[in-house]
Image 1 (cartoon, rainbow, N blue to C red):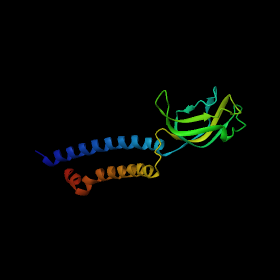
Image 2: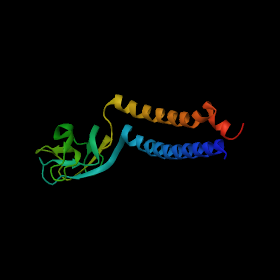
Image 3: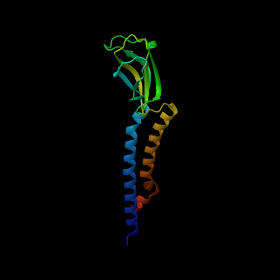
Image 4: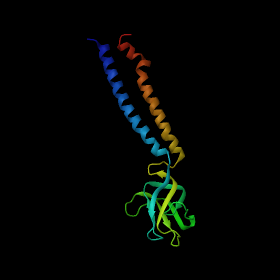
Length: 165
């Protein structure tokens, strides 16, 4: 019975399964990092119909907006910032979703349709800069772990012994 051959096959199978599963996890984590660490430019993207002034309107695709500029329905005249209030990280009263509340002033001059230009933090965005850095570092260390797992049998000499060299 060739014990070295059996150990070598088992080692190669375990190594292959570990690397395949690791690469699948690595790919899924790497694809989702962009939504966690990047903001999105919102340009004429969200149209709000201002039916009743003083009633909050909700942007449900973002958790926070910064650099907000609101335009009238023609898109060429900015609405003065004293005619609306923006509140980030609020819970939508009917759906329970995290959203941004924009409340037009009761005396707003433009009372039909508003379009918003802003920088949007997606719902999955991590607001803390330290956490965003850690997300990237976790991916780097995961890649290094895959390299270490793939090289450890070679470094220990078991793989070379198993194939007879």
